[in-house]
Image (cartoon, rainbow, N blue to C red):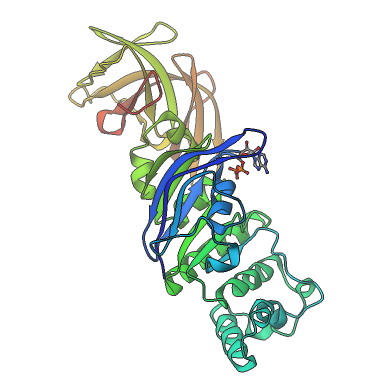
Length: 356
Ligand code: ADP
């Protein structure tokens, strides 16, 4: 058990690429921290610096209140799970899990106890005599986790461990990893580019952008209060709708020149961006004049029924938007709908993209 603390961590690769630009993250003992962001934002580099696989250009990495910057991977008491499980194909499951412990010279009976305990936890006991090629993708991934668990590390590091699995299996494994991590209580850092995986797994979510932390917090807090348009459009699917506006004394003007009714909403920045989640738009009935909010015209482009709900694609003030409605939608292309963003569902960002 251990905390992990990153203070002003930087990485400049040979050749001058600044991949990580001064990152601070404090991960409490037992927490599952997910690093999420688009490809190239620096999340693998950061994970590899925690693992000791990449040198640290600046700042400190502490595990259990001890600076580990200059320790090798083997001395940091961490275990890593990768996407390409890296199992030995010629070894049985048992031996794949026992391998690292044998290398460290652990007594045989102790190894046996650890492997069997981990196998029981992961429901792999009946597969211990098989070889990796005789396993499904999900079972292989579990063996890879078993190999990490038997080491009884202070910290688990996961590098996109589920990205080779199909969508359905990924969903199942996500639940398994979450339950396992809770059960074992081992502090974990998990890297993914998949926002759904990030939202559902994280105790603490770190959204990264271009080598820097854009926002840190509990997943639902970030969903409800994204700190920037970047976070707003990265977390949530379909993403938050964002519509640029200009404000003057008498209200808001959309980019296509339409002036919109803004009751009870004051925007101090001249250039701003209004945001709303696809599920937060209401169709106006004409009786909501007392409710604060923005009244807008939505031109329907098309409707996608996806089962329990439908996505209505349309245009507001020249900007494309998507709206989720429960069940089937009766809207047709070219319909015009009067819609409301209720005041409490409205997100406001300045022209610089930061939340107002
Ligand atoms: P992510 O995991 O978020 O996709 P990475 O940490 O792999 O991002 O990469 C961050 C940035 O650092 C990218 O611009 C990438 O091209 C660069 N980078 C990664 N590894 C190296 C390396 N060994 N040498 C130079 N640049 C690298």
